[in-house]
Length: 426
Image 1 (cartoon, rainbow, N blue to C red):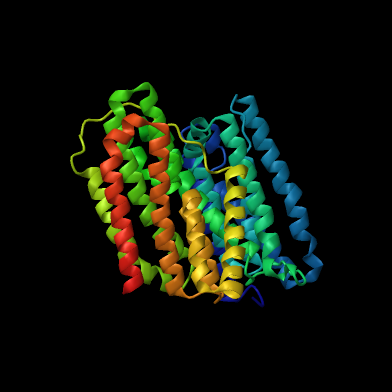
Image 2 (cartoon, rainbow, N blue to C red):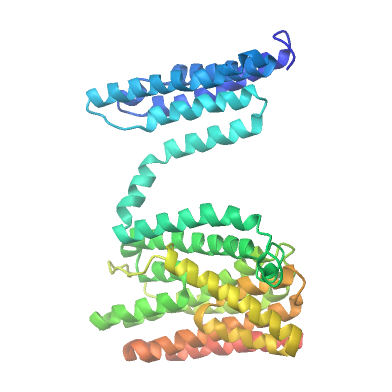
């Protein structure tokens, strides 16, 4: 952008108008009058103002104060709008805050940061559109769960960027990026697994009672099959007539757990060599387990609520991260100092969390510490131990569910055992 006769000036000006108009269109779409006080044209002009301020500063350093002057100007305009909204009994700072962001979006266009401007604009529009959904989310969660979720997000926002640049000296260098216990990588896996779990948890919390125990079982397997099994057994303490449905929910949770493990190992290892090896065994076991859950299942719905603890909080997240960390160190030490055969003993951790086993194995394969074949075999063993863990929970917590579920759960265990043996010998 050399001068005002350059066609790029008009292109960038139109882009600035477009970014502001997109946000303004969303505001104008709102039903209440006060949200439409500043609509498409207002936001387009604010973005254009930001663009011109940055553009002039970009052309001539003497105009460098234009952007700095623009901030209080737009800020004052936003405060005026907030006051008008307050006088109209419609308090709220969303639209005024969106004005400031839109101004800076125009500034980004003025400095030729087009991609950044587009990202900010889309993100802003998405946040504005998600108003009802975020309000519903706040209503679904209780106070402790909401605080836990916010704390978790705060840790991720702070720790994840910090660990990206971690550069510790030996022997703590194992925590650096690419190390045996790469903290940044562990956090990424925690976010991935906890994100899947939290979405499932929200759906169960909101829709579970309407869709039935089977629905909760399916999604519960994405959270934690052991926790789901315990929740199903707890239901039967007060409602013995639900033993059959609780058993069905446990089968479905166990089958989904197997598929989830495959998804985690595929995510944890970018080239997916381990996932390709273990996929036939896991999918075979998951398909039969899910079929056992659906076959003979009564289709009538129920309004029983399955209680699940939110997985999206500091406590569960830290425990999961520590488990991945410990498994990664122990598996690496076993492979280096004892022999690859000992690595298989890490599968016992599947009694606690086969997801953590999958995550740690994927990380070690990625940095070349263990082979994809060993990782695949260990993951299948961990999945089998997870089934054993569910069996133990049933036997300990609910004789009623055990009477109904024992034969099928033993069959599921046998299927996993056979699939594991076939994986070892092929």
